[in-house]
Structures are given as structure tokens and as C-alpha cells.
Image (cartoon, rainbow, N blue to C red; front, top):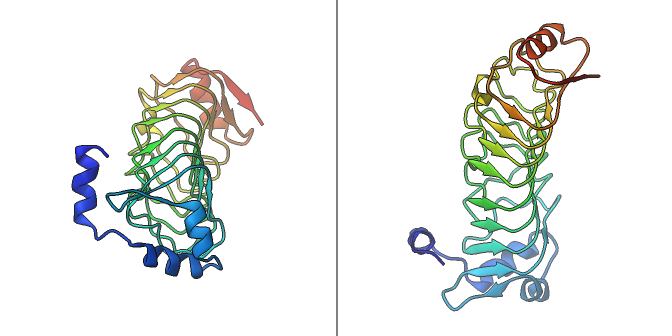
Length: 223
């Protein structure tokens, strides 16, 4: 662990193996599953060597002391889940969609794949990493603006169907290595200065946004 990680771990009482077992039993797993999933380190922290799939398990949190998932992490469809800062790293994608969160605060500090928060009731983006190595999916939330948005996104950025999203100003100077999806949002203007490798997807009824995007030189694909 880095020095920063060691300091953070000291702030929280690390779960012991019995805590992992009790947590696992809450969604129908047992000690054998814990032993086959988590590698306990000498300092009391744990690592998962592969994917960790916890969809629809009704978990409230992730284990305190889980430092890294060396694969993808899916914790979607857990409406009582609260992000608690663990794990610190995910080597694959991070799917946290269909949850009941207000912001991404407490998500892993480092994710090396896509990040998904579709239909998670987000009203703020504070807590997202500055750089996303993959797509960033934020559709069907309660966003009014994109303050806190990642500034470099290696895949698509999707903010479709945020029916309160009136301001896109936070996208100024953002780098998007693929497409920008703006379907079915009320915003009528898009800032200049977004670096988009792909195109902007806009629905045909969003006439003001289409006009503004074209006027500013963006490539638009109309649906």
C-alpha cells in the first residue's frame, strides 16, 4: 500500500474475517466463498484476484479494508448501498448503476475501465475521478449541471435522459475520446472548447441544442 492508503486504513477499523463471513451470509454466501474470493494480506487488508460481482445482493457497503479488485466490480441494483471508499482500486470496469445515491463520493479512487452510474439518483458528480479510462455513463439521473465531471474520458460520455439537466457548461475543456450522448435533456446550449473525437448524439426534437452545437462546429448525429 502507498503511504496515503496506509493512513486511510488506520482511520477505519479493518474488518476481520468474521466480519466478511457475516457480510457474505447476508446475501447467501458462506465462509468458503469468502476464502475463495478474498486474499487476506499480512496487514489485515484484502485483495480480490478477479471480478467481484455483487449485483442484487442488497448489500449496504463494501468491506472496510478491501484495497483492490484486480478485475471488474459490479455493485448495481443495491438500493441501500452507501459508498464507503472501498475498494481503493478496480482494475476493470466499475458498475454502480440502479442504486440510490446522491453523488459518486466514496467510489474507488482508481478505476481502469468504464464507470457506470446510470439510474442511480445522482444529483451531484462530486467524487468522480479526473480521468476515466473507458466510458462514463450517467444517464437517467437527477443532474441539473455537470459540475465535478471527469475532464478526460477515454470512451463515450453518456448523460441521456437527465430531465433536469439544463447546463452543460462544466464540459468546457473536457476531452472525450469517443462520442458524447445528449439525448432527451432540456439543455439548449453547449459550451465551446470540448475536444470530442466522435460525434454528439442529439434527439431530433432538441432543435435549439442541435442548432447551437452545429454553430460551434461540433459533429452532430440526430436521432
